[in-house]
Image (cartoon, rainbow, N blue to C red; front, side, top):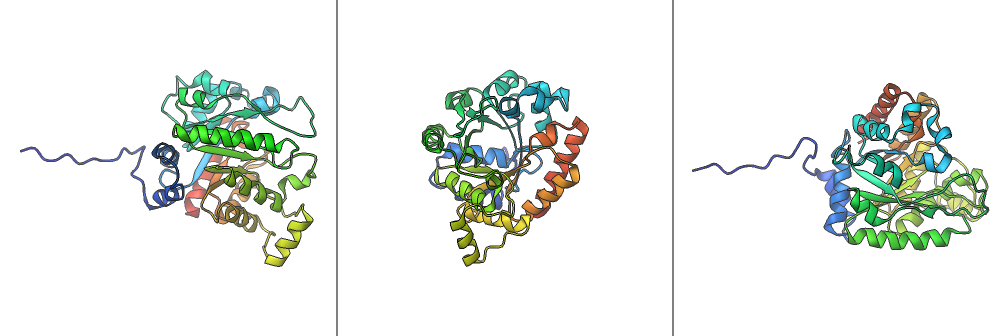
Length: 321
């Protein structure tokens, strides 16, 4: 009589632990496909099973131009470089526009979860009402084996309602085929000052809007200790909400995402020194951030330095628990 075989999870896809199960329970209205893809990202890479994320995003070639993005590290002109960097660094996922993913998807099939950015903009046009163009589809994401779609909104833009309406349709379409949505919530437009784009009240508001539009994962910039809206300043003061430290501000943004029941991750922003990057990440992690999505601060460094930086960021989130 043969012994009954016992299933053993793959070392690259560990059984869902209590934290992953808890996070998935917050998405109870979603179908099995959406939750499977969320779990796939949470169970991949060096942070597998922790519920934390470090994602490599490389949409800067479209957004800022190839020279500004890749000249500091010429190896990064090649889309293969970014796939390999995300894999070797142990990232949860790699996010990019259609062309970059298509270029290398076959060579790296199945080696790292992919997020297809469905809209993008460039810096050639100077507009009072910024609005990204839809540049890919949910069908493209399925064809390339992606684990999620990504979409950028600009709260504060006069064209924001167009983006909100497009996003809602794309979220619904993606859900129907089992794909979660990552929303890049970047406040900008003539209604905001430059300083206001990263004000704590504006960042928290943009994060809340993203959750209300159906985002599964919200990406925002690290907020600064500044209040843009007079009405919000009164509300912050009345409620006694602290904003002095990065940890205070991260806590409030996480709270604004359905009291921490939506995944919110913070961008790395413009390239800066390693010590500055890690200090910022420590503050965010202490405030309950679910992770970092780090582009220029990674791929503009030489490969060895980038791997070391990403390893340090991963370790910070691992220790934060």
